[in-house]
Length: 180
Image 1: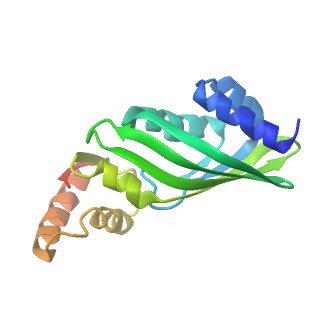
Image 2 (image 1 turned 60 degrees about the vertical axis):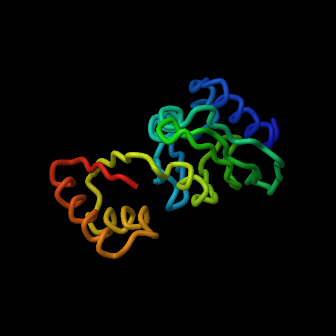
């Protein structure tokens, strides 16, 4: 099976929610890197973490979430996939379409690393106007505050400070509810 065929099989597995097929395509030391700024974006280690923190999370947050493939590019031990994300946010009801490129590195016919490069602004725009429930997952509070501040770029500085003050208090009780 060619590397492109492996990646095509991976997308079929996700589309059909056949996670056993996904597990069989990935190495045990899989590294899955979503670009910073992507909602829930992080680096996952291992296929199980990817299924739980990426694919099931997307299903919970988006209706008809999909990655529409435009082109596969063979790059030796890597495959580049050009396409776009689409879906409807379950809370805001807004749709989005965001261009993205996926880069898969393969070792001995299995995916060992994924890197994503996406237009995250269009995704965040589709999520705007919602009530965001944000849990504090043990990350640095400063980093969390910087991420949260990015939700309110058009607000007056006084409003942002008030919102951030509420967030600091809410983080102490492990959840913040913010109206964007």
